[in-house]
Length: 289
Image (cartoon, rainbow, N blue to C red):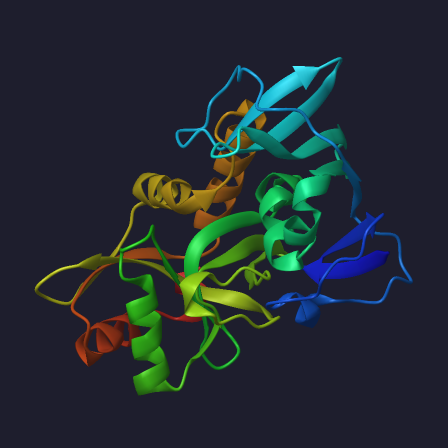
């Protein structure tokens, strides 16, 4: 079975020896397969071993990395069953093999779960795409991003823009940001978190906002060094690979040089919306970049 998708302008092909269930938001990202893909995932099923001793641990110990005979692996574990359920092999910069344990074939072969073991953040970094924890809003054909970790209030602010400004939430949980022709763009992906909001749109970014829950509404434009630090904190990539850190840092610096980033001390009310609007209205598009 072969499926072709396009996320943030990157063509991804999946060749699988088992059927892949189209669920969640993945169908809206399907594309024609009449061009050469940028990234290819070959998916196979096999019997995998028990959880091996891990050389590098993720804080929740649900995956680790190994370098076996010159091939880099990301291995995923079901600790309750002491089983390895998926093994992602990094064969080249644009080719991956994902082996799924036979016992987990029905679950992981669902596209909703599959994207979680494909390491899209790492794969897309090589194409200049940085994944962010952000609520991505369409405000009249431009992207307004509320970036932050869980609990920061990004979904609340996106909902307020829907309520008071007729904004459309393109993705309530994550997005890619990238530069094209001197402009920063936002692109969606088929992971929407608890918001359930996910559309396929790539739009030029007008502003990136970091909400901070407070007792007043106040927006502050961040200096470059603070903007880069805030962007890195919200970026999604595996910190255990040094090349990922270096690439992500370079992309953050490029984004900060092209678009404004602001902190927003805020309440969950229309005053927060007006604060952001006032900033954008008092700053031309040329200046905001």
